Image 1 (cartoon, rainbow, N blue to C red):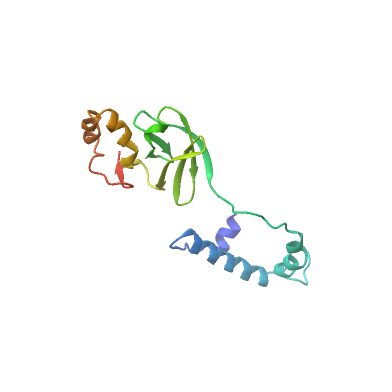
Image 2: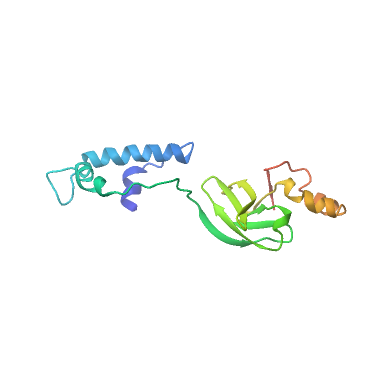
Amino acid sequence: MGLVRERFFTPRLRFKSYDEMNAWLIDRCISHARRAIHPELKDRTVWEVFEAADRPALIAYRGPFDRFRALPASVSKTLLVRFDYNKYSVHAKAAGRPVEIHAYTDRIVVRQDGEVVAEHARRFGRDQTIYDPWHYVPVLARKPGALRRVASSGMASISAGTSQAS
């Protein structure tokens, strides 16, 4: 990995998105493979050996690849799950039961029994609490007095999908 980092990411580069970075990286890898001499077949490039021997042996992948990291989590009494030093709100119906967090590069999806109970933009800072006020509406409908506690927590002024430092 150190060789790849040194060869392709020195100096440190910045991209607008992962898609932009991946497109740039594919171009750089192919360019390198077309120039580099194969370590065993010295009269051919890495790209020539790949095209002649490796590519025909590859099996085509059928279907989309949903790339995420899955982790089990528990929902707190305040309808929050913790992931990577941040907290994310979940729908009230998920309270007190285990959930599975699907961490994508750009978002967090929380599932319970196969159903999505929360989706938020992923945050990479620390100690942030990301609320979706709609998650709390069923609780507020059953317990109107809970609105005082919500207001004192600082969440009352937050609009959907914004964050609050905890």
